[in-house]
Image (cartoon, rainbow, N blue to C red; front, side, top):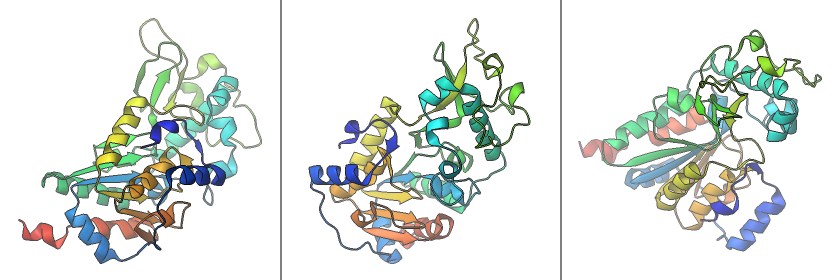
Length: 307
């Protein structure tokens, strides 16, 4: 696959997508089908299923998306909050934003889409079949739904990394530091949270006390090579791929499913709207993921007959 050409997180432009499409000579596909029975037949025969999820799958839990109505990047500028340069320039404002997001997530629960995926994985694993989630989400709702086989390509809100010693660890403190207690959403009109850097989250490794940062992949940063390698292996070997709640505009994730489709593997998209990649896929199911996904992944009659 060509994932290695696109290892930095960024928004994919129409020009870049067109260039990649020309380079790879993508085969034109017919209009995607919404035939659930046809999808279910393919699903019943698949042994290795890759499920790529994005912000849309968590939206039904009340988690704001990024580019949709009410999305984070419609209210705040990504360049000011989600880049290494932003953190270097203004760590207090970046931490105010990520602390706010952490606290928001404490009020949210997995929705029927998360639960359907977790139940599907549990059921199929007993049949010797594999289901792997490759998620762009950093909210850990898949974990809380009971799913374990997850590749979090953009990291997690509840992981921190030390800027000094590099130590990375889970961090579920609330608040993450005393200076952020009671802080809500950052004011888009204010440039600085005005928290002295020495009071921001600090490393607790012996003798370190370095500044912590969220262990997420910001725009312009390279994805974890180990996670990318594992994702590449899953995508190269899967015989069915689902794309759930993703806008398909942030790469390299935007290229995952089209590359699977290019080798002739059925891809099914579950989304509230069409995306730049929709025409590449065999299926498209329009509507809320929590409504469309559960019936697609429920126990197939062929599974029942094998019991």
